[in-house]
Amino acid sequence: MIFTDYVFPTIAEYGEKSFVGMYLRLVLPLGLSFIIALYVTFDCVCNLFAEVTAFADRKFYDDFWNSCTLDEFFKRCNVLIPSFLKKYAYIPLLRKGINKTIAKYITLLLSTLMLEMIFVSLLLIY
Image (tube, rainbow, N blue to C red; front, side, top):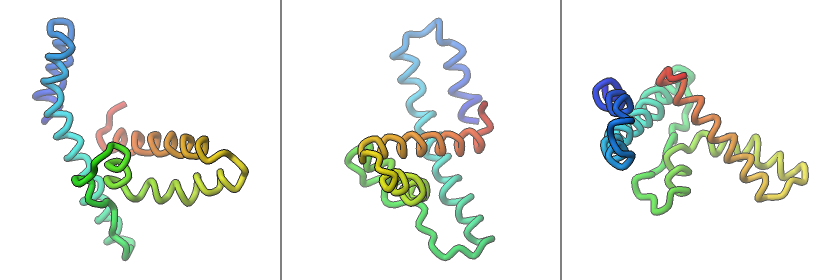
């Protein structure tokens, strides 16, 4: 409903409006969509899977609302993917002798791709 009422009409009027005006009209609906997607993903879907599989540790996110930097925000808003990638991507890359900085950027790229796949599959946007 947010996309059909606010986002799609604004994008359709892209040629008629300035970029700044379009940006200001899209900030609130896209921010709200992001918060709703986080809630659905980490509170509803993850807890549903945790209930079904009897998964005891339910720490899917930290207090991301208290973050001071963007890096800290993304580490706190999603605990599952960074902890998974640290164990299965970052540490094996370090063991193979890859530089820490390069391993960090490869892990960041994998994290970005995984998050995009999750949001695309949830929102069915292709």
